[in-house]
Image (tube, rainbow, N blue to C red; front, side, top):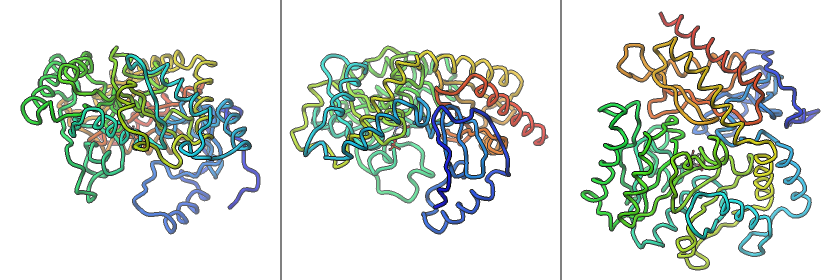
Length: 458
Ligand SMILES: *Cc1c(COP(=O)(O)O)cnc(C)c1O
């Protein structure tokens, strides 16, 4: 361990972009060599620079480089790394007690997080919340609850979906490589419907919502049998699938189709929820009221916490002892989540997410007008992506271009992530604590990286 003098993170960290070495630099390369001997190759790394501190809108690495953060640790540090309310509450809790197991001795902060989620979640009627350790565990529990409450086995998911890496959630996930290849056999009773993906819908965006809803109803009624289906599970904006915003009206059609058949609707808000899109939950943009909602990523500012929030009569359908886990709803993570809610309220972060979205959409719209390689610009709030295609006009995915532009951005001190079923999407998830100056600097770097890459490709 180095640990001589480590910089403090949080909002006090200097909010500047600074590239002082090649990327990754010598110290990170040394650590990467160590990583290769210690951890399995199956763990990839988007940008293998080792982090020393992060906060506001930057990440500082072991070589002293300071990156503009357009990733938020995959939509996790939405309120900013080491945000004051999160750090202070978690630190104070660490000094009180670290663990009891909520199933052995409960504590009040767990109830406070549940109260907050019950109050905020757009689920109708009386609500209950269970806390877990991760997104995948939240989805697993939502499916368990839906099956127990309905007595039906089936789960319907969508093309391009991502729901996690455990056996059930990997089975629910659409993309084979790298998530599923070699890991079968998969969990049974999982059925897949087409997603209303406007940019890639075969007959075009106009009839997309209607035709996709028809395909779902047909799958339910003709292939699976609605009476065999516990739940339809959908992301309100698909995350790993490439920030696919379902065609307007599709989610409300899905809700209607479910209700008419006694099927529960589970909305997976793990990536899009908790203020990321300018609403506390992304499904609020479509005005739908799911039966169950899963959250995780942004919920506790980086501490591991997930949740299922749902209608009380469904949540209570599982008998005592049927739910839970040793670490679930850890008290430090609960305090961190309460800090996240405080940060969102104190700093008007819902409004901030909308402003960030406006800035990104305007800037990226300009780039899309300039470059035919940007096939689509989409997303909501601080969850925006561009889909890159061959400039031939027939929407052929350009994953190589996406990877090269991302690499150029990284070398210039901007952390961006890729996504998409075809690997051709660049996604932008800045923390809501980023300054306008850094946001605009990041977008400028992205534009330059695209310009250079497209020029060098000719
Ligand atoms: C990340 C993610 C998950 C899985 O969460 P983990 O905490 O990685 O298990 C599930 N659903 C969605 C939509 C996600 O983005």
